[in-house]
Image (cartoon, rainbow, N blue to C red):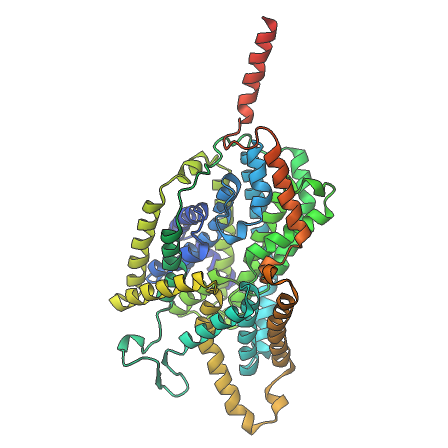
Length: 548
């Protein structure tokens, strides 16, 4: 009870509320600009939160994480461009709704179901985190922890890349980066090349900002083309009626269950959950033919599923110390810098912090929902902001944020170097996720493997290596082999990652057909649709004309 009171009491601090408001504004802005991901924003903000208390820092980072999940729906609906990968499925029905003059309704339903998904996932976190952490604390020793880390990296390799070889290369590269610095078992220096700045290893924040921030910035600079697509400015009515809310109920229930399940899989993420949730809701809907043409059920399903992954990702991160997604990987790095180690021991050493994390997620969701329900006509103008201004601001904050972590120019150099490396990886379509996971979890895996190898010669094999460790290693192998076999059996031109093959070809064909039908309808090609408020005026003018 004291942990509960202490955790909730920490949220009553005025400074925590102020930091949450800062995170709320940043998260919405990040989500609203396509290409600026939540991972990039959290990594950038992490550099500025190192001097804060843990609860204050988590208030900023977690609120950005939540708010970006609301903000990224805006460009998906108004411009047909996902703000972050998690809102890919939102474009299936969100943009067609906007072209029908129902953008305001799409934004409102998206906000409501996103809040439902996140709150349900926080409830899942509250229900499962303690049992999972207790299980891990009682049964996970060095062999099991090593196997768990290998399983986490293998899952991300299997999910994040179209080419399994590229995914493996990314994971190995991350593990190599994790070996730079002192080896904890012998205190020997490795790969430091005589540089004192590398004795403590690579700066995690610098690597993350370089791979996700600077690389994305350079890529946008080199590939930028002036867009001719304008955001839809007439938003129409905002509030859904009773029929539309009732329509969404089944879709929310089905896709929410999908999102909660997918969220517990390390590295799966909201993009995969959104696609699966949309497809599952379509299969149980009474009107599947409307999906992809501006269906209220469709947008409710995709956004509920993608939002419901947040709590599952938080669960694996806090209970097992395995990042649920790339944002959580940054979160782990920040917590380690604060002297907090996520994992089973967190629930015994800092139970008040776990309560604070749950409280921050709930309050951040409610604040983001309230902001989303405000008529966001200003966001339409925000989407027209010239990109050079945005890029300049991001570059300045990247440099300042990275320098602030160590007050050393070498950290900034590391960031720029990894920015160039990240750009090269982007062009080669090598994913950055496994690199980050390897960098964070590599030292943990190495340490536990060293302990296991020290014990093995003195005891029987099966008394050291439990069935849990063997099962996790088998699952790790299968998570790489199965996608590789599936890709090898498919046509060469259509091979893809799990994220690309979640939906069947027929489903994608149906989506394209629905969009083609919308394009063929008269009046559907303009980016400014008459709002509902303007329609009565036109009808009254027609009436007057007939009276004459």
